[in-house]
Amino acid sequence: MTARSRAAALLASTALLAGCASTASHPSSAPPAAASTLLATSMTVTGTGTWAIVEMGGSTADENNFWELFTRRAGSTQWELVTPPGVADNGGLVATGGSGSLTVAFRPSQGLTFSPLASTRDDGKTWGTGLLDAPVAAVPDALAADGGHTLALVDNGTIEQASVPGTAWTTLATPDAIATSPAGRQCQVTGLTAVAYTPSGSPLAAASCGRPGTVGIFARTAAGTWQAAGPAAPGGSPVRVLRLTETTAGDTALLASRTGSKASLFAAWIAGGTRWTTSPALPTGSSQVLASGTGPGSTAWVLLTDRHAAIIAGPGAAWRQLPAPPQGTAALATVSSTTVDALAVAGTSLTVYQLTPAGTWTKTQSAKVPIQYGSSS
Image 1 (cartoon, one colour):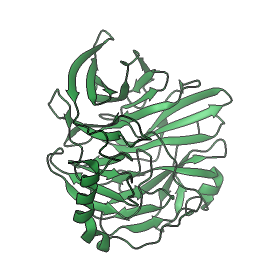
Image 2: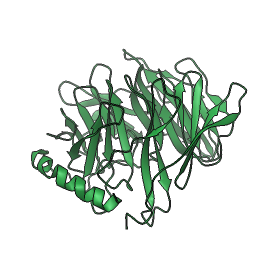
Image 3: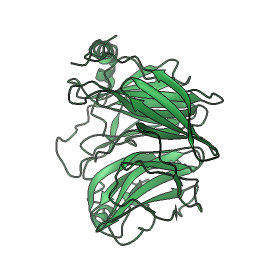
Image 4: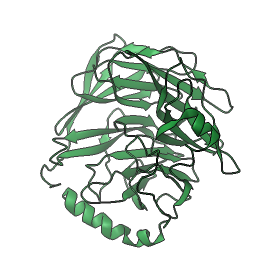
């Protein structure tokens, strides 16, 4: 089935859902809007396995790029293609998981103005459909789930919440609700970057701050207001929260800080309480984050544009520089405390490499992905 026909099929299957979706207004332009970040990532989900999202195919300008979802099921040594069918995915995929399930949102493309959703509870064997009646933001943590509710950050900075993914969405925060709160004014919010839940189920939002010395992580109170909930700022420069993800061990954040030509990344964790633990700095120089993700427990990883990569095991640990990943690596995946995979992409080919105890990358899998070039135009 071509991407265009898949889009038509999904539109037909979700037409009834559209009537049930929230009719809350979505302001077309109100500061601060959602930020934009590269979407390639991987994550470990309790009760399932490890998931990875990478971009494959060809030119984005010609709509020959296709975002694909892969899973390495618990106990398996192989990655499997499980991209939800039914809609063009040229715009990107955003996913969140918890309690044995995974929900995926499609970034709009091919004329769509909303984000179709797909959910699975059987490791991608079957998918249910849903609908977010707005474009989900182009950040890897634009979705969050706590088992009973789902959060979505949309392009214009609105935060939506649903009790069942894709239906009965209601507005939790308007685009300026966080920015105009006392905590938001202290941060000088320049863009929203993520949503998450605390382990106790309270909504969180993350942002980039214009004021040095502040970290833009905010928690929604029972009274419906937003208050500062982040760690102390590392250094005295402005901080951008690149990631805010609920993991199997609590919430993990990835912070970016720059002073002049000196740029650094920090990981931060909080589990069960109110005290954050922040990692030592990972100097990045002029390199940018190409992809990032989380793994079992409190593990986090980053892949940089200069082909450097690093991983950190959790609070109290230091960043560990990895050998340069193989050419074409689009994402890493920490499958276990001792297993790190690199997913390399070249057109329709996926090649998986595993880091050996000796510090070398060895090929463990290669596969062709059935991409139909020209099906999106």
